[in-house]
Length: 348
Ligand SMILES: Cc1cc2nc3c(=O)[nH]c(=O)nc-3n(C[C@H](O)[C@H](O)[C@H](O)COP(=O)(O)OP(=O)(O)OC[C@H]3O[C@@H](n4cnc5c(N)ncnc54)[C@H](O)[C@@H]3O)c2cc1C
Ligand code: FES
Image (cartoon, rainbow, N blue to C red):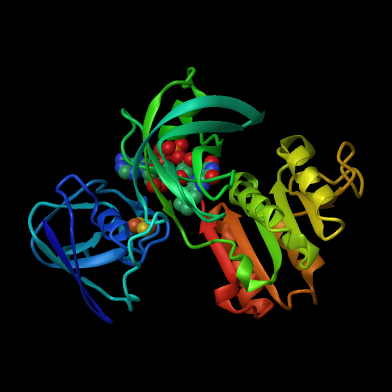
């Protein structure tokens, strides 16, 4: 099918198979369509069908909340075409990206390893049918047979071209995919992946100090960012501070990996574990003394420790939406950081 996007900045055309979501087809062909979650919750990928018809995947998607469905509004990440379509997208789209290895596409994958990191957090490794090239901080959408819809997960590992990806998954009681992943042994199970996706990426050429603010599983993309920074010897010339929010001391994970990054950064990387539901027993972690401990919500701890130190920083935020919203408020409204240097993923 032929899809025409009428944007504020002009008209764009691309092909979309009947089995494909309009957003994914456009992104895969280099179109810079607006999106955030790519999975139906945020509403950013709004388009109005002015000609043609679509099949909607998830009618109850929370992303529809602010859309006028009676006027033909669809979420492009939930709509598949049943005819040629013209969609009005109220955004300024930059010119399409040229074809390259970093454009998102579908790949097959197999789970090779699952390991429990904390009470309600697991790590899974997958092997890909075709290698992937991605930026640190990006995510992919995973789908498995028997669970309706896709779920977004941020890559934990980073290398310029990967045949294996690592993710961390926080258990959501009653959640379709996390229940499946936490359930019986899933090693060897096949899944489908679409990506890489997301713009909350580390760009070493910006040469700015890094601030990472992570709630729980939000630490995933931060580890990829630290890995990329380490490969570039980035902390020889720049500083970094990771704020990692968990409920209590026993809920921390990947602390050995974080301590290893601190040791490699010759004093230019700090990590603070913020405990929201119990007082920090000391100033430093009892087992990993290079990791500081603090009491409070990770956003409050960040705001306290970063006061007066924001100049020349780029901030990355990931975790539950209320935490991300509070971090955005503190960074953009209170600390007056330019939005271009505040990047986030809401784990909806
Ligand atoms: C950019 C981004 C990155 C993320 N990274 C991580 C991460 O690294 N680690 C992590 O633990 N979590 C991450 N999440 C959250 C993750 O995607 C899931 O929402 C979470 O794991 C809960 O999934 P679930 O299947 O257990 O819960 P569910 O409540 O079953 O589903 C959660 C999500 O799945 C989709 N969905 C549900 N039902 C349907 C349906 N019928 N049709 C279509 N879609 C449906 C929706 O997007 C919904 O919000 C991320 C989210 C985003 C947006
Ligand atoms: S990108 Fe489609 S609802 Fe978030």
